[in-house]
Structure formats: structure tokens, C-alpha cells
Image 1: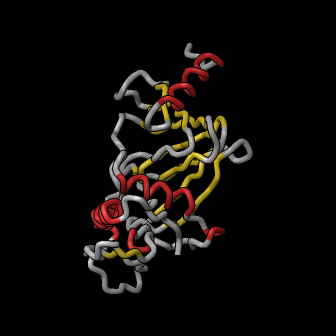
Image 2 (image 1 turned 90 degrees about the horizontal axis):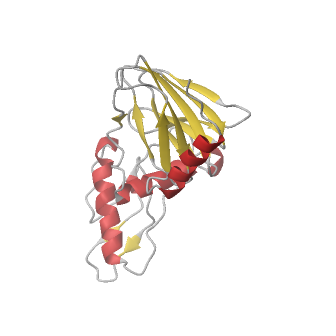
Image 3 (image 1 turned 90 degrees about the vertical axis):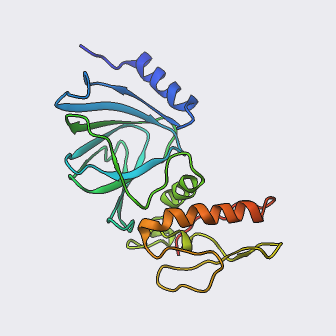
Length: 224
């Protein structure tokens, strides 16, 4: 019998607080070949849960503590839905193949994840950024704030071109221009036109902002 009691939960939460990833987990299954993959995950605000899907698995999440925001997307990165998991609405089942991500809404949140086995790695959305990259920090900020009641309607894709206000390098060497996905204006920063390539553009824009404005805070992502 495997009991997750107060001491195990304390250890799990402590691990999430000290981790650079701001989350930790404990496996409840025996191994990768187990026919029911199940684990507890502790999360802290600011953890980056990279949007992904499971082509051959459904997934169930049960919020045991705190609150989690679950987001769903289409294949191009457009937000198609958002729900809150907490004590009042603790369970969600994600169909096979659905693109989804999550943000932690409260400190010391804990979820139980259940999927059919055997273990298969997450299949990350091509428009997302690698964990730990500057682009990941920008995407996380967009994920945390992009919701209907804050002015970012469902159907708004993640395009890094919408993320930055107009900015001009003091040296005149580069320029970053705020552009929406439907209307593109001239810019000296080349921008791929598809959501799948926007990660490359976002890395470039962050690089431009960081180099051109060493004393300025990098522009934040927001819906348009």
C-alpha cells in the first residue's frame, strides 16, 4: 500500500519550491510499462508547462490543492478554451490529441495526473519555446494573461509579432514593431508568417530588445 500523507505532501511541495522549474512530482506507478500512468505534481506560480498533446492517450487531471488554469489550443496556437481547476471544480479529462497547457494560479498547488500506459513523452506544439529559453518566459507570460475577460478573445493565436510595442534601438541598428497577425507593417526584423515559425521570430525579437535596450525591461506579452 502506498500512502501519500502529510509528510510526503510536505516533501513534494518543498521540492517544487526549491526547483528551478517550480514543480516536482512523485510517481504512483511502478514504471514506464505500467498500463495506468499516474503521478502527483506540485506546482508553484511561474512554472512553465509547455503546451503539448498526446496523440495516443487521453489524460485526466484532478486538482487536490490550490488552483490550476488549463488552456486548450488549436494546432496553430489559437486559444480555444480556458478553465479553472480548484476545489469547486477539481476534475478535467482531456481527449486524445487535444493541444493543451497549464498555468499555476496559486502557490503550493497539487494535481494528480492519470493517463493510460505505457509511458509516452509529451508531444510539444511546434509553435512553443524550449523550457528555459527567453522565448519560454515570454510565452509563459502570454499564457498567464491571455483570457477573454482580459481583452484577448478566443481565437487569438500566439504570434510574437503582437507581443511587443513599437520600439526603436537608440543606436538605430534595429527596430521592433508591434504587428498583429492580420495586418503586418514594415519592419527591419524579419518575421516568419506562420505560427509554427514564430518561436524563431520571438527568440530574435527578444535578442533585439535585450541588445538594443540593456537598461530597459523587456516588453511584456499581452493580448490585442
